[in-house]
Length: 208
Image (tube, rainbow, N blue to C red):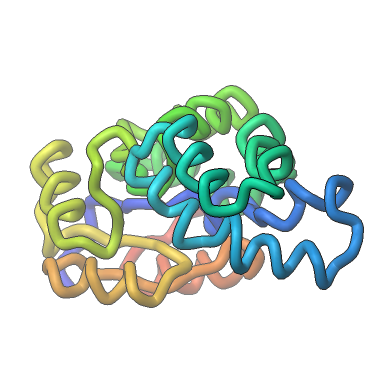
């Protein structure tokens, strides 16, 4: 493998735990009803359009037009969003900081709404430690679209063959590989040992 110089981190499920179910634990106590709501109303497909940058009010209004009896619950998603990111994967964040301290070029590429990302940065300041971030909501592109890898490469002047990308989504990993990056599927819950193994296999060894 060509010597890795650039490490690109995803955020959700890599640096932060994310679970939309937590938004509605109190609002919809019944687990079956809550699962149905998140599958058929405030679904992943609906939420990903906010990651693409869709205005929250527009998103809410369009969904309420389809599910008027769920209006209150639909409008509860955004103000309770913070509940969906209850903790960071601190061991992973520590390794990321170690990479930065060791002189590696570290950036973030994440499918994330532009407004909730600012909120996440306020809650988890280590998100501001890398050289910069491409947030899908800011540019209207989402992984695994090839255009978002191209944008990130240009924006941060990366050499694709010297870039290692860590993401929890298999589709996003395949998209990155198709663009010419080295990419490995990684879940933050797997912790320090798994990440250290991935980095070691890429020729990167950290003391801390």
